[in-house]
Length: 252
Image (cartoon, rainbow, N blue to C red; front, side, top):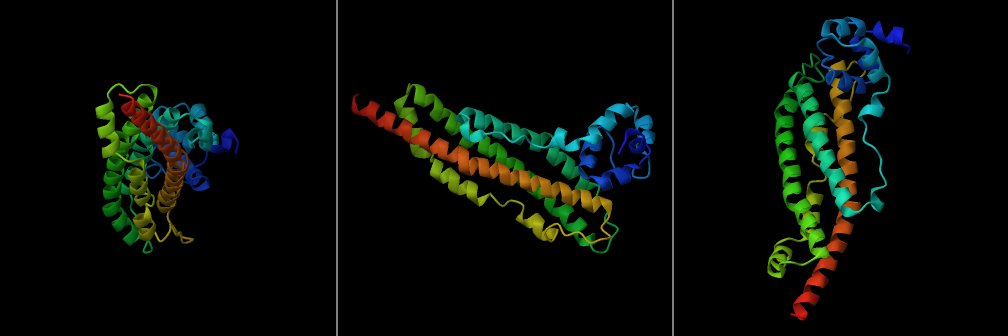
């Protein structure tokens, strides 16, 4: 679609053509459900936004907002942790507040989705609270433990403290607990009947379901990185530190 066509297209039609555009517009200060009948040019004028800049953002939304695919298997463990922490930041700062706002403003006005609206407005805030608690706990326990192991690999400065930490923590236990959290969106899938859309589904429903689907995909990628890359590397590190510790104790 050329620039002229974009600027004369309604916000509703733009989002209907590509649901990711709703996310782009939201962070430019345009809530699609409040301006669905306005053309892009009209909204830009009202919001004092540069039309050319907004058009550029809308022309390639996936380039601006999709996660990069990186060869993490070859990365050192500290960079993998930083990558995961950055993903946590993006979830908490951008993606989850956006989805929460979509749910909060959700007005189904459709018999097939009235129950979905009611249930999502009840369940999603609870999911959000639990999810944020989980990722902060992960950073404060698992990530901190792995970073401590990294430091101990270089120099064991306090053997008694290290012994207590290893006895108290276990990467195998972390991995088992993590596996229990791997399907955190099961309840939301059940509410939305696996994000089922009828032909007459309202635009707001399409956008919410699209965002939930993409978020779930991102969580699965995140979990796979932790299960298949982080944990194996961290367990190997833990074994190395344990061996070094017992060697040090043996000669003391």
